[in-house]
Each structure stands twice: as C-alpha cells, then as structure tokens.
Image 1 (cartoon, rainbow, N blue to C red):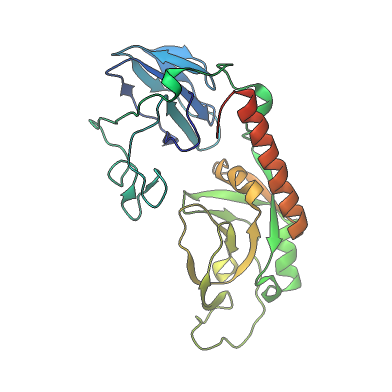
Image 2 (image 1 turned 180 degrees about the horizontal axis):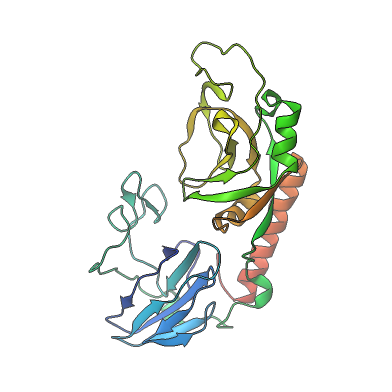
Length: 284
C-alpha cells in the first residue's frame, strides 16, 4: 500500500461488508482466510489489488480465525483520538464517528504517501503469514494472585485443555474447561465475598481472571483497565495476537514461562515483524 503503521484499516469480524468505490483505489485484504471477490470474481488475499471506480468488493465465508482486514492506499482518513485512529465502540470514540460502519456510510480515504509510489513485491511472502490453527499453546507469566489457587486449581489451569467459547470479542475471551479451585480465606474489607474477588486493582492487557473459578477470561485490547477479580496470570505480549486469532472452539493450553522468556519472545516477534516490513519494502 505504501502506507506506514499509522494509517487506519477496516477490521471485519466474521462477516464482511459489500463495498463499492467511487474512485480508483489500491487495496489489500489480510488476516483470517476468506474469499475475496471483486465484481463477483475471486481475487487473491494478502496481495495488492487495483480497483476501478464503481468496482464492488465483497467476501465469502470466513474459513478460520475471527477477523480480517481491508487496507487501502492512503489509509482510512479519520482523525486521531488519543493518538490512535482505531474505534473504541464501547466508549463511542475514535474511528468513524465512534461506531461500527453501517449501510450507506461513505468512508473517507487519505491521500497516498510518497506520491503514490507502490513498494515491491505486491504479495506478502508465505513465510510471514500468520497461522490460524484449531489448537494453540498460549504462554503466560503467573501472578499476581496465582498463589490463591489450590494446587489442583493451578494444575487445571496449566495442564488441562480449555476451549474458546462464543463469548469472545475485543474486550476479552472466555474459555470453557474443567474450572479451578480457589483457596478459602476470609475476604478483606472492600473485596467481594467470592475467593476470586480482590480489592479493586489495575488490569494489564492480557490479564487472566477466573470469576467463581469456572471460566478463565483473557482481557484483550478493549478491556476495562481495572476491577475486583484476581489476576492469576498474564498472557505474554508476543502471544496476544495469537489469542486474538482464536475462533470459538479453539483448543488452548496455557504454558507458564518466566519474565525473561516473555521478553525474549517479544524481541523475537519484533525481529520477525521488521523482517516482514523489510521484505515488503515498507516503512514503519
């Protein structure tokens, strides 16, 4: 596209839109595998596509994962809010009028960068494509409250299989499985009555809570920033995109790693991303 990382794209969850262009455009569709069609004809995903004014872009059924993305040369031209062009629909801020797109909306597109010069190649190399698997291992750093689980409870969290439920969105993902057990204790003033409750505290992105000991919840990008549930672990930053790609039914195992392991994984991911950007001749 010739864009930088600051240009906005469209995010589509499960079902895609039908879009028409009122001028020539350069686009690419990435993310979860889905059939891309221009004027009803199949086109390649993860490749640059040239659209003429009046062309219609539509999509088939998603074949895995949950979300795919439509990028356009110049980016979606919406103002930055708090340093971002993304939409936070729960707070009705950012993006296109703080909400999801609706039929009849006309989405503004920014001017192409670098005089419209396009980088080479025009297709993302296969080695850089993400994997959309039906099974995942998600790495976590234990704490701050893993000590409040019984030995059996912690064993269930780390040694048993969990599955993503349909209750999953940008705020968080809920997992079904064997459940865990909390140690009984006298709750402090200001905390709820359940052993999974704490006095309100801040949540990191990726925090794992298990209200009532039943279903773990991973807090994702649009989650609340604090509350009264104990955090037994945090998904490492390098695996947060992996979690975001998980569709309902995805079998998941949680693996405890050290903070040093988490930092090394983050460095490895950054290196891989830089290689991908370099292979596409793109700038950050």
